[in-house]
Length: 343
Image (tube, rainbow, N blue to C red):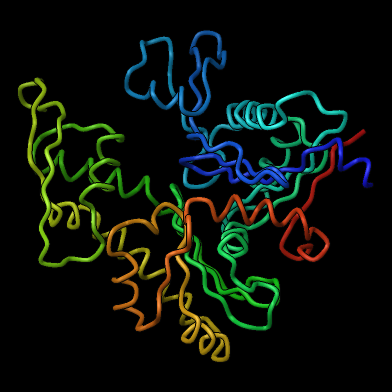
């Protein structure tokens, strides 16, 4: 076994709707790329993956399309996801290995058995020797350093690109959880819709994401900020620049933020009293890109009357937790499912 480990590179993969991160045991995160694939439509040939493919979104000629093969945290296009996984696994391996790697991939807690099987098969077909799945909230909690194996309640809220995962964890298992298909992508889409409705201006998803990061806020305060954005006027068809305010963007994202709050509250309501007391003392941990939304921690604190913490490097927690699960596959058996390569 010791010799085997010298030659293989076990890896953890955060297969996210927005980004894919690959963690290699002993090396930390080695790949951090957008979950985007550029395809030649007439031949189905993969032209680019990751950052290079993302740059093509909205800028491709008719015979090339940039695709996000995952939607709301699950595989929407199996073949393209498999091509993307194969690309990332081979790139992470760097050179040909004598052994195929064991791979742990995280999936949202709400996925069906069919969806789980699709992810496992994609990993095996992409070159993995064994494919393990770990639920996203468990991976996020491990990566954030929460005491998941202890007999104490820990609450994690992981806001990714396609889903928000809320879970209470104790003794290495998920006690109660809720997965909603609301995440950073939905916030971006809400901004696009708001600008279209209020200003008759069409903006792209990258512009919407910039607006969200720059002036977006979950919590309204007296500090109003403004930003100029450029898009296409739907009446004249010409390029146009407008100014938007942080209060407008808050209004645009209100419904999605409310959905996230409701998921947190409903999970707390289902939490056993002893574990709820632990959470009241330890607080709620936020991970994922959505944890960086300005004022979200303050809003959750106000609405739940509980301490709220943003994890260190929240974007990396799921990938790190997925990778760390490699060290304790035996302990994690109750939260990890496994598929082996046949033959």
